[in-house]
Image 1 (cartoon, rainbow, N blue to C red):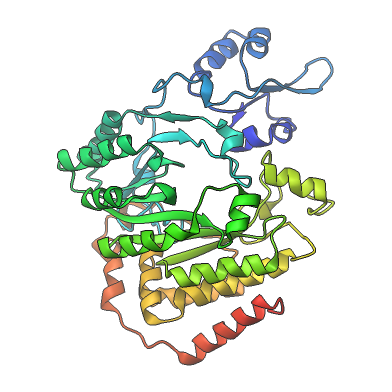
Image 2 (image 1 turned 30 degrees about the horizontal axis):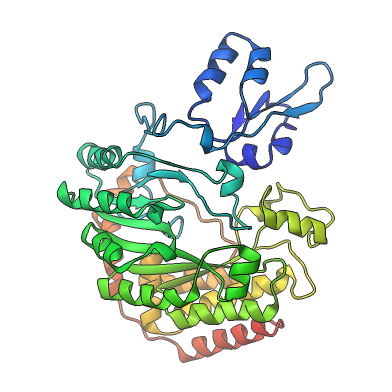
Length: 437
C-alpha cells in the first residue's frame, strides 16, 4: 500500500507501480485502522466500496480506479492526532547534524520537530496543502502538545524544538495558551517556527513567543509585488506590514527568514525583480528564493498546462521537482535558466554582501562562519542544486564540539573580500539583465 503526499497528489501515477496493490490518498487518521481490518480479512470489495480515497487496479480489466479523495473535514477533532512513538527509534530524528537541511525547524543541538495542527484554510494557487488536506484544519489539544514537549525533555533531555505547522498562528487564543503554557510549566527550551502567517504576527503575540523561548521565525512573504500576491498567488499578505514585523523581531532578538517564489505563470520579469529588491530592502536575517514549481493538483499547475508553459515531456516524477532550484515553466517573460541564474546570485549577494549579513545568515543556516564561503561557492557552482546528506551519528551529535559549533559565529573573524563582493554583485546585475553565465 502506498500513501502520503505523492500518493495523494499524483495517485494515478502512484498506482502505475506494479508493486503497489492499493494507493491511500488523503489523511489517514480515521481510515487506516478500517483499511487494515479489511486487508487482514482479505475483503477487497468492502475496502473499495466503503472507504474513501482508495486507488487500485481492477483485477479483471487491469484498469486503474480511484475513489473520492477525503479531506480533514471527515476527521473527528483530536481523534488519532496524538503521536505514538513506542515503535520508533526517536533518537535517529533527534540527534542529527542539522546544518542547512531543514534549518527552519532544527538546531545544531538535538532537536525534536512537533506538529500541533494539520491543514490550512487558505487557497494559495501554488501550494499543494489544499490538494492534500482540503481547506480544513485539525488542531491537537494544547495540553497534549505541552505534555509531548515535556516527555521529550524528560526522556531524552531535549531542550530544542521546531514547530512545523502550516498555520500555527491562525488561532490566536490557542497560540496564547500554548506559549503561556510553556512559560507556566517552566519549560527551559528554545524553539523555532518554520513557517508562519505574517498577517497574524501581532506585537503581543511576538513578545509572548520570545518569552516562551522562540529564537527563529520563518515567514512566507512569497512576492514583493502586491499584484502578484493578490491576483496570481491568491495569498493574503499585505507587504506594508512586513517591515514592522522585521523590526519587532530584531528588537526581541528573534532571527527572521523570509521565503520567496519567483517565476509564477503570469508574473513579469519586472515583478520578479520587485521581489528581489523587496527582499533586499527588508534586511531579513536570511532571504530564500525558490523557483516556482507546478505541484500536481494545484491551480497553478492547471494554469501552466492550459497555457502550454510546461515542456511537452513534462513528468510529475521528474527529479527537478525534488527541490526549488530548477524550474519547468517557460513564458514570454522568462525561462527556467533565467530564474535559476537570478535565484543563485540574488541569494548570494543579498545574504552575504557584508560581514554582518554573513554572520546572521550563517547563524540561521546552522553553519560555522568559517565554512560559509565554501557553502556559497558550492551553491554558485551548482546554481543552487544541493544534495546535502544528513548525519544521524549519535556519538557525534552528543560530542561537545558539535554542540558548541554555533558559538564559532561570534568567535571567528574574517576579512570580507571587496573583490569577491564586487564580483558577486556584478553577476547579480547580469542575472537581472538575463545575461548571467
